[in-house]
Structures are given as C-alpha cells and as structure tokens.
Length: 336
Image (spheres, rainbow, N blue to C red):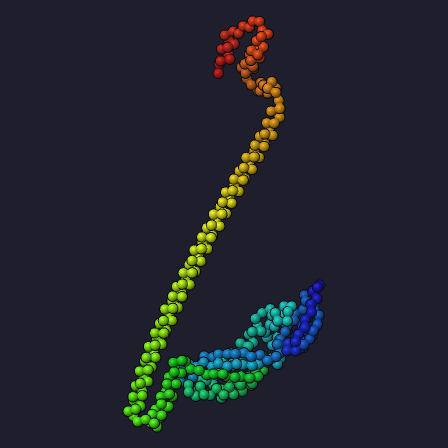
C-alpha cells in the first residue's frame, strides 16, 4: 500500500538495502519495511551450496576421461559478490531480476575445471584413474590460494571427485587385459597348457553365442521400436485428419451461419423498404378517387384534362339532353 513493502530474510540470506543510492541497512536475518519506488534490495545467499560437475578431459597419453564430482562453497564476502553480480530481487526474497546468481556457481566450476585439467593432463590413463584422491588434494589446495576465488568473495569448503572414467571402449579393454592376466595366472597355477587352451576355446564359443543372442535380441527390440513408431505416426496422422475434418465442419457451419445472417439482413431490409413505402402511400390511400384525379390533373397535359371532362359527361349522361362532339376534338385527342 502506497509503495510500502515488508521484507524478512533468513539466517543464511544477507540483505543489502540501497535507498536513493546509499546503503541503508545490511545483514543476515533482518526484517524491515521499505519504500519500494526508491529502494533496491540485494539478497545474497551466504549458506553452503553444492554444485555437481562433469568434466571431459584428456590424460597425458591422449586418452579421454570423464571426471565427475561435486563442489561445495559459501559466500564469505556478500558485499563484494553483490558488487560483481546482480542479486537484486523484485519484491519477493527469492525472485531475482536477472540470472546472475546462477553465474557464480558456473564460474567456480570453470575455475575448478582448469585446475583439474592441469592435474589430469600430467598423468597417464592408468594413473589418472587411480589418483582421484591426489587430484582432489591438489585442486583443493590451489582453490584455497586462488586469487580469482578471493576476488569473487567465495570460499571453497569441499571439492570431491566421485569417479574418473575412461570411454566405454577403453574401459572394456582395460578390464579385458586385467581379466586375461588373472585367468592366465589361474591357468598356470591349476591347469596345464592344454586344459587352458580348451577352456579359452570354450569361453570364446560361449561369448560368440552370447553375442549372437544379444544381437538378435537387439534386432527384435529394434523391430518392436519401429513398429511402435509406425503406430504412433499413424495415430498422429489420424489425429491430423480428424482435426482437418473438424475444421472443415466448423468452417461449413460458420458459412451456414453467415448465409442465414445474410438472409435475415435481406429480410429485414425488405421489411424496412415495405414499411417505408406503406408509410409513404398511406396518406394517398386515405384520399378519395376524385381528389387523386385532381392531383394528377395538375401536372397532366391538356388532352388528359379533356378526357377526364368527357368521363364526367359520360357519368352524367342521363342529365344531358343532347351533346355534339366535333371531329376536330376527337382528332386532337387521338394525336400522339
């Protein structure tokens, strides 16, 4: 009301209240009223935050590996962070005006990736896979003394690498090599050379059969997937046809409504014209025949007047004893 709003923050939210270009109040867990038109409020989370990451790096022997882990940090200098990134909120405590709060975690992940790449790139594949603890300790030490991290006003609490994995093909090759070594040692300890060869042959045959079974199973799944996809496409096409038909039906109904409206409008116009003509002729219909004839005579030619006079004479023929009509008068009447 009247631009006055209320804001309350939690114990892990640092509030910076600017009013008219000056910091009016700041701190965690504060609650206050403020005049919204002249105020700008930044909310910086100061609690710990976890950021998962996945890096694709290359070892010293040019083998690609995937580094998966998690980074935990917290803001130690919220004023500095608020001066670097836009943490301004719009009325609500968690409604930021920009996506700058999400950029902080990405910057930390990028910095951690740079240090991780330097550690992984100096080790061959086998060593890099087994040296996750050493890489974590080295990267964490570099992050603790990083000037870029201090310039952000952030402290790294933990840096954890959950797994360093090679590509599936390389992983299978390493597993096969280790497996063959173990099998060879077991064969030398238990069986002689011939039994080992027979055993290996049997395993190869089983692997081939298992491979064929797996391939056939995959082919069956592919056929089922294709059939399901075709059914889905047919269903979508049927829906499209039904939608088009429904649209045509609706269009025809609208056309029918339009024709009906035209008919109604034409009928209304005809009624209006009939009413206007009736209203125009109503005064004339109330006049007698003699009056109408007199009105017509005012604008008629002399022949019409003579004809009307003769009509009057004919109507009163019983009162006339003798009437002479000359040929000249009849000839004048017959002329065009």
